[in-house]
Length: 250
Image 1: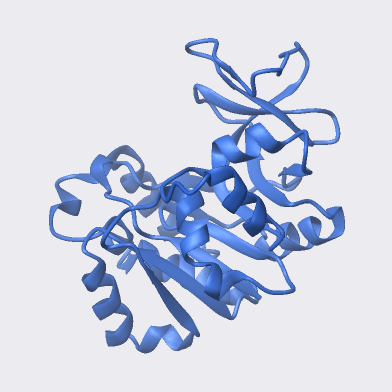
Image 2 (image 1 turned 90 degrees about the horizontal axis):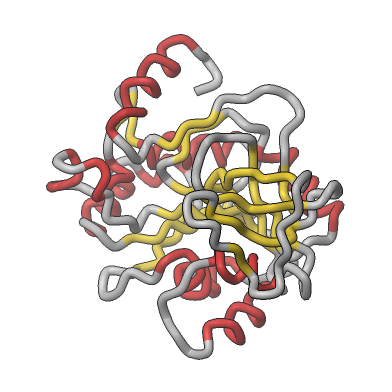
């Protein structure tokens, strides 16, 4: 199975830690974020992994080479010339991700013990173009779903902005926060090419929202409890350290 790790971010929220390294190489409990995600993917059965790079990209290459790619089949999607955001990053890595089967995308700064294989299987069974990990979590921006967890739109609760243009937000819809993990079918590539209109840098979020009534975009909610942390900010690094000490699943 194929997967992609987004490791190209600038890591601005973690400065000064990221003044001399990429965010993906910041350590938690003695291991880098990147190593933790690689091994989590491998344990779930993902054996063909692409990693995009930008900020201090050579340090990621050197780190992987020094550790013999952690015994995994890894590819580098090089964005050192231009940081392409999520949609552009996926298109840039198409040569490694395209094929007959879906692929999973995982942000390098997400620490979780969610069952990735179960999420992948749910996507396969749904026939969706994309399945996004979502949960009830305090934030300002939410994906909005119907009772079948089909994406209907997006809302910024701080500003009242909604998207797409025709979306009518109704009370009772499921407002859920994105968890930085998606499973995507290869049919998305042609649609991303069309949507981007030749623009190299763009995000998947507006694509999902603008196209959710043309294509099936599903939300994945794991019914059993799990731990999830965005460790791309200083206030959660200490929390992550404490979790890792207590839980063998990390």
